[in-house]
Image (tube, rainbow, N blue to C red; front, top):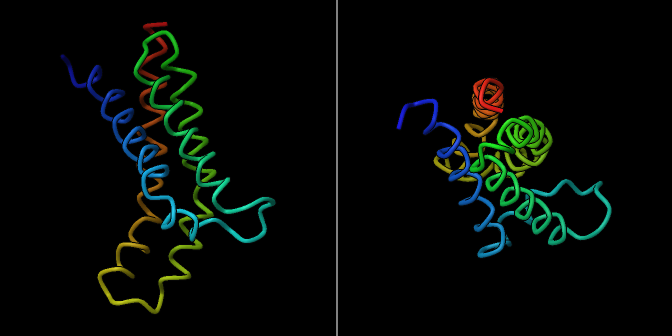
Length: 126
């Protein structure tokens, strides 16, 4: 299996793991939901977990990979406000937790680029 074939499956695995975590331990995710959103934080936690699982499934299948990869890039952009909220909320926590929260912010860029790269590599295979 080549690197270009592994890459979408690794991204799918990352999303699937995160999606399952949203259902298995929702409380930490609830705390990252921006207050201005309608509904309950738990509903958003479950919705984002379901979205991650759906995106993972789409990335795993060559036929839906390109569309799922583009949707994944958009998803990573869309969840950025939750990461900003987490960093703001954790700014007074112990240094390791604060570093993890602030470290997540720049990590969104390579995740978006990874998803776009998966979409680009899927173009010739559709």
